[in-house]
Structure formats: structure tokens, C-alpha cells
Length: 271
Image 1 (tube, rainbow, N blue to C red):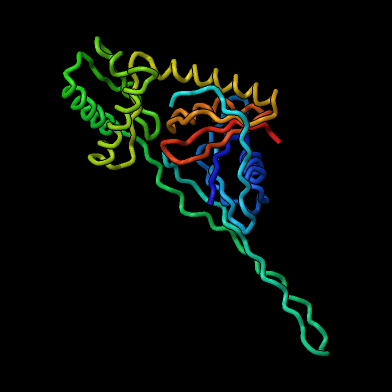
Image 2: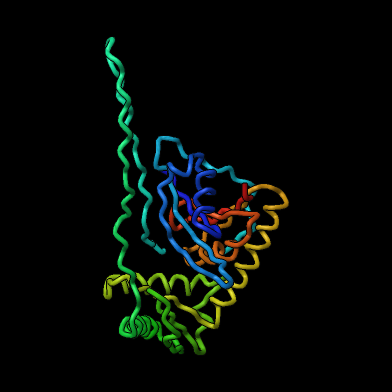
């Protein structure tokens, strides 16, 4: 069953866009809220994962011309919306007067138990820093690592020094691989859901600015042409940058499709 991700200003708007993309009604959706944030002056955004929960087949969205190449989850649990069922009315038999069908029993939507929120602690940060220093020591590089800050389940680590540029690599491919390796080790040795983000030479900030600029440029092309555009495969944390950058653009919608590591963001005209 195909699942898509949608970002919009409100939950209702995201559900409607998902229903349109999948070719079903809103009531037939199984929805998982992946991310919800509130901005200044009451503005916010919500990102959901949706799939057709009823009998109606999910319609596969049409793709337009592929967008300019962009360089390359986190699994996030939320509450799925349950589908209520209606009982059919019973029909009378023979010549006996048909009795009025009893009303359908009300079905109360019961959300799944909310997952325990993972929040990184100072001890988690020190443990991740120790793992990173172990990897860097094995590489015999002239770099130092430090804790930049904590943000929810994430520990932000930075690398500085003479060889930091080597650890960023062309278009961030080395630092992305190092971050991936660090989180695999953390999952095995710490195992509490805390994850690390890794930066060097201020690459992440510059990358976020470049992705935001590119996303807005492609969105303008999508609106002008009336056709969808599909970005090249991106890691989950970079897909979130694109979704967030376009979340308040009422002229377009965004969702993700495909399987890791080839999952891509689709930018589509708003219906």
C-alpha cells in the first residue's frame, strides 16, 4: 500500500492534499503526524504520512519533468486515525411490517498510545562525543570535536581543525557518511533513540541555505508550468529542510515517495 508524506500549514489541509494525491476521501485515510510546529504570529506547519485505509485504490501521482539535481529518519511515530464502520440496516421479511432499522452503533476513534518522547541528556551528548572521538582518533586526523548543543532527541556535534575539510568531502558526502556511521554505533551502544547531527566547517548551515534557495526556485517553476518536479534522493534530515522551506507556500504541496536510500521529495502544484 503506497504511503506519501505531505507538508501543509494545517492538519486538515495536509489531509485534503493527501486524499487528493491518493484518490480517496479524507475519511479513507490512515494518517500519521510526523512533525508539527508553531511559528510566529500563529503560523505553523504540519507534516504527515498518509495511506489509503479504505477500499478505494491509491492513485499514483503523475510526475512532471525531473528537477535540477540535488545532493543527497528518521522514523517518527505518531497517532493513526482509525476508520469507523457503519452497520447495515436489517430488512424485514414476508408480509410483516418492516421495523425501522436501529441506528448504527457509534464507533469511538481510539488513538494509539502516544510514544514516549526521546530527549537527549548531557550524558547522552558526552557518550556520543566519546564515540565520535574514537572514530576520529582511528583516522589520525588533526581535528577536534565538541558538543554544539542539544535539540530534542538530537545532539549537535561539530568538527574543527586542519583536516576538517577532508571530513566534509565533496558536497558533504563524507560528513553524511560519518554521521550515518556514528548513529549506527550509537544505536548499538547507547540504544535509547538519541541521535547525532554532525557538522564541520559550517557545512550544514550553508547546505540548508542552498537547499532552501533551490526548493523555492523549483517551486516557482512548478507553479509556472503546472507540473510536478521530483528532486534527487536526499537523506531524511535534508528532506525535512525542503518540506519546511515550502510549508507556507499555498501554491504548491510537497510529499516524499520511494524507499530509502532513494527517497525523493516531490513538489506539486496545489489543487
